[in-house]
Structure formats: C-alpha cells, structure tokens
Length: 149
Image (cartoon, rainbow, N blue to C red):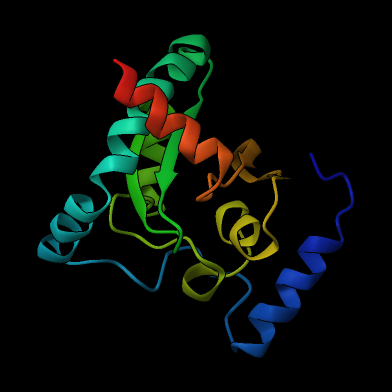
C-alpha cells in the first residue's frame, strides 16, 4: 500500500483545475434507474465474478463496521455490501449504486484517486482502502475462477 501521501496533493490539484469544491460530500453524477440498469447489464460479468469474493471478504470482516463497494472503471458504484451501521452512513453520503466516485464527480476520495493514480490507497475518512481491479491478471483471475464453478 502506498505510504507516500503526495497522491492526495496531486488529487487536490486535479480537483482544483476542475473548480471542484474540496468539501464536496456527494457525487455530482448519479445515474437514473434506467441508466443504472443498463450499466449493471453491461457489467454483469464483472459483478458476477466479484460477488463471491465480496461475500467471502465480508464474512471475514462482518460485525466490524466494514463495507465493500464494487465500482467499474469509471468509478460508478455497482454493488455495496456491509454492516448496517456503516451502510447507513454511506447511504447518507449518497454512496449508492449508480453514484460516481471519480474525482471528476466528487473530488478527492479513495476510489476516484486510486482510479486516477492507478494504485491502492488508504484514506482516513471511513478508514477507506481502495484497490482497483483492472482489466489485467486480477480481473482475468476473477473471471476464470467464476467460470470454473
């Protein structure tokens, strides 16, 4: 995991260029129900491959106020799984399926910054760790593992 915090500064600079309020709490981009349904259909292979792994990880952290979010390559939330208390907090921040967590949509945040920086990062708010699954060996492994079942 990246211990160098310069990625936060770079994110703030990118967001400043976009004239984003650095205290933005909610995503500026939220899909309609039809747009979300269309995206879920297009991303079904990723979702179906990720769900068993999300369930296994959640079983491990259940009861410790954790939640897991699956986004696509644009930072659109596709699925959320977690403990009720933390999910309520996330939903109050409109972190729901169809909300975009990219830097362009909400500013500096673990998901958007990891997508931009192409890495894994830890943020203090909600004790977030985000690791993108890109179209490479990890995603290929997820898809192959799902096919084997």
